[in-house]
Length: 241
Image (cartoon, rainbow, N blue to C red; front, side, top):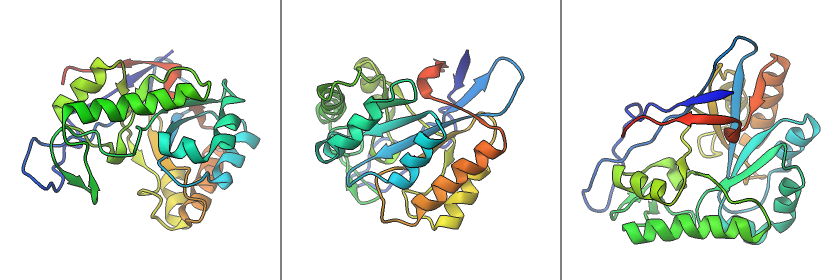
């Protein structure tokens, strides 16, 4: 059994906002193991909108590598076949909540990386619940993890998301910088993952160079003997926020 170490005090950041408001936080997430053995890494992928990057998905399927896939309702609407493929491998993939419309789950007016935030507690709840409902409408199990667009939150929006029954999915290693890295850079980032890392990358940009590097980085980790786990393979340890 593995446990999650979630130091919310790390990676605190203030994002540009349309109106000054509470500090935004970007939670970090690690996995820990209780016994010795090979390095363990959790691969997580965001499917924000667009299509599916089969360069990555084919590697995961061929090598039988487990992963956690965060999908939006927008992505599901246009990728039903890909969603069915994920559901056909329930022991390998878990489908988790990336929101309804891919808006940051921030409960005050803000613009983060050029994306307008939800802007109120009620809008955060709609974003979270809409994403979860869309996942279950495909026949997938109820999701239990949530990662909002931009992965930034306020303390109060984290409280609201927790009230809705979700755990916040942070990460410790950004593998592709929003799918904007070149292939070589993405490969190096992911290949350098250490024991306990939770990797974030994107699986919805098949025309971006980063995807090819992500796929190669995953193969490099496997060649190192890394063991891959899904987020649900562990019980999280969440500190007081």
